[in-house]
Amino acid sequence: MTTFVVPGAELDVELSDEGGHPVVQLHGLTSSRYRDRLLDLDLGRGLSGTRLLRYDARGHGRSTGRAVADDYRWDVLADDLLRLLDAWFPGERVHGVGPSMGTGTLLHAAVRDPERFSGLTLLVPPTAWETRAAKAEDYRKAARVVEEIGMEAFVAAGRATAPPPATLGAPETVPDVTEELLPTLLRGAALADFPAPELVARIAVPVTVLAWTDDPAHPVSTAERLCALLPQATLQVAATPDDVATWPAVLCDDVARSM
Picture 1 (spheres, one colour):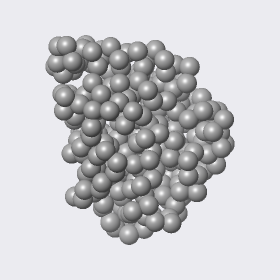
Picture 2 (cartoon, rainbow, N blue to C red):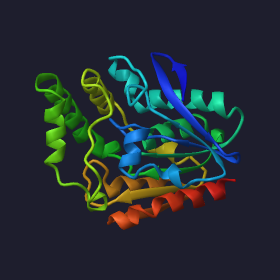
Picture 3 (cartoon, one colour):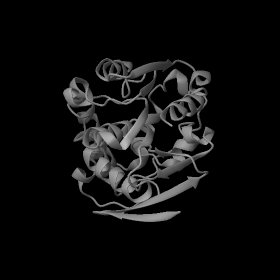
Picture 4 (cartoon, rainbow, N blue to C red):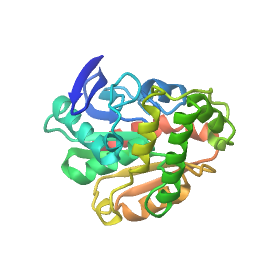
């Protein structure tokens, strides 16, 4: 494990170096590379013969962060990502993979530095653009719940919500963030959105979008909109855990095409 310093945080980073094409793997809001492994969202576990960079986003997992909501906007997280890539893979084109918040981060990074990426595998894209405002209000309400009642109330509310069918049987987990920082992360998520659609449409690399059904926080409509905008995108929608189990192989194929 390595610590990498960015403005306002220290990121916990690991590189699995088997030679070959560089790949960077991100995770979702309140998660970490460890928690995503438990939730079967660690697609990189199926890769071999690559240089796979994984890290915990600022404020998540083993990385540090400060109580500044703007630090957790996806465009700021994209700054962190591009700094990491400059340090680990200078001058190289990288394949990016990540769910939800990781998808938002990758899109902002690809808009900012389109030559940096050879391809993208985007998992369960979250609410964006027209559907983002309502979700942002949910995040602000959740931040107040954590402050006034505690993290357990936030976890209990999530437990009371029916999970997407594709995640049935997944182990129960809790946010991999501190209770003190969680309200700030939620308010940062409320400030976040994808890049403007006309900018997303300029991302001219192969993209696979992997979505699942019946998840209001990650609606298939976002995935469909992304695929309509991106010039080289394909969509796969999972309805069962068996469908999700095929996703590591999808990433392997995506990376092979990037080489």
